[in-house]
Length: 414
Ligand SMILES: Cc1ncc(COP(=O)(O)O)c(C=O)c1O
Image (tube, rainbow, N blue to C red; front, side, top):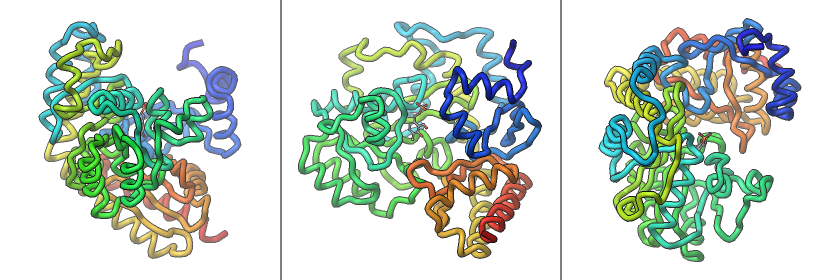
């Protein structure tokens, strides 16, 4: 049986048996079981034929749309010449992409590639520890940085404990946007790094106060800790700047990118390191190895992703998309004040908070039935994450907003 030959019911059956039983059962019970067949631009087609607008984008993987033709053309051309490469030797695609990322990112000097965001966060933590000679990591309460080793340990305590990966001696968690708590933790421990998402996705994209990230930067400097910016979701043009840190006017010591760097076509992620954070690369050439990290095919694809993301036409379009969403969501908030509590928006990084504790979760289901796929925030289920693509056209935005209107009307009628 080939994948193309199976029906939706057969796929769900197979997945429930062999892939992730609980997830499949939960999605089925919630009435949001989708099996993606065709996908194009910002649209997904369920195998049962239902069409939906994608406002989840797999966390930004599809910033430039599903099956972006320029990204596909790059991959097709790349496979004529390249493959994964060999981790002992540099290659043209890997070296050129490293230079491009470093040159595009203030404060950075080296790039180390990974096959996914979690692996890149792991390397960020390892580098900070190696540079500072300290172990303790400060992260945020309700943080998600991936499910690999150190990323899992540094994220949500319950998720780490489920795999016996929690380590209270090594990870201190402080609330978001709370400089006093951060300072207290920095004074109390010998801290290697403060690891934060620029706008925490799974917490519902709360917008940091004006002074928060600059204050965090100052506190890290004062206490000799590295500032690691996880830009897996907030990078690559989503805030209006290439990186969210640029939007907020701060320069971290280490910046992690992933998801969208792949163009949704070939997995690749990167850890960008400042001179001191990457000093170990000058001394220990085999200090870190990743067979698939920096695959030549992925590097070629990521080069095109950077070209497209930085193109003035894309930057302009992304700004127009953000403005249209801002107008549309403000109108919805005005029409449904009893349902919508708050619109949190930084460019295309948007959280829609409902008054009801489970409001974001309910919106996921209501929108699913209205032809939109958008996911609530895992750590704050009152919030719906809204992640429009950089190149979304006006008609698609308006169609999605009309679905939001219908969903809000239903919720308001309860
Ligand atoms: C902010 C953030 N960091 C890291 C990761 C981990 O990335 P990956 O799933 O590619 O390991 C994710 C994934 O959702 C993420 O949202």
